Image (tube, rainbow, N blue to C red; front, side, top):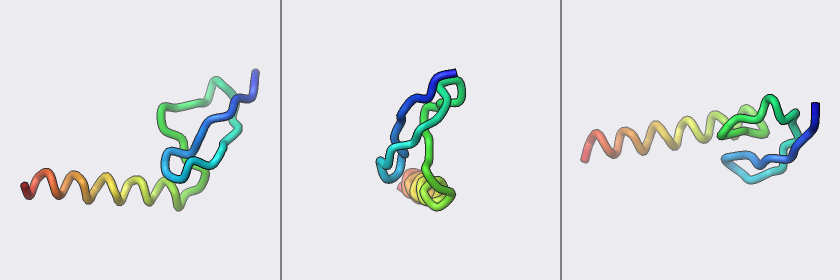
Length: 50
């Protein structure tokens, strides 16, 4: 297996992970993952309200 560098979808920090485990969106910490989920939730609420 080969390590590859990807970026955190929230803050842009580099993440090193085996290429077989890379996903479309990667997060460096649980905080970044939760922050992304909260912002997506707000965007969906705005779309539904509008």
